Amino acid sequence: MNKLFYRIFLFYTIISCKSETKKLTDIDGNQYSIAKYGETFWMTENLKVRRDINGNDINYFFPDNDSGNVQLYGLLYDFETACKVCPQGWRLPNNADWEQLFNFSKDNVAGNYKDKQFWEGEINSNNSGFSIRPSGIGNNKEHPNNFGENTLFWSDSKEEEHFIWTYILEKGKTKIRKASQHPTYAFSIRCIK
Image (cartoon, rainbow, N blue to C red):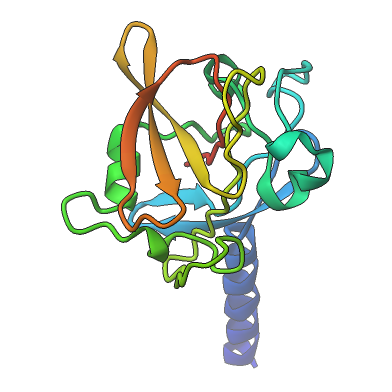
């Protein structure tokens, strides 16, 4: 009888631990899938929170200037906002985090990270389960928003005093690019723990 009880207890403990590591909830109640890559947990969806971790309203942009795109593509944030919106206990990834995830030491193939249903005209595997969608960029209409063409993710690493590193996936490109950007532009966010 004790062995049976122990097995049932162990089974439910394992199941409850696994379910805790598959979802993350932000301050607005949005839930995100997460996955472990190496020793780090990553969100596998773009952030879509509309308040910072203290409950204050924040600045954000809708992908393609359309609020209907938020559920599928998340929101776009300037760098200052990006630094204060990850859920409690989570943070913005730095360059080392991104480069370890994308395995920059080898031939990083963007198709392993692109959600195969959202990059029109491409064959992508999304083998990683990271599910990147082409959310484009947010800005004050100074430049095209490139919705459906690319996605940029903020890093927490600065190139120099006024520019921040980003990681870019582009339509038709198999390489993941790294480039510095002005902090007033708005890009996607994935948080890590």
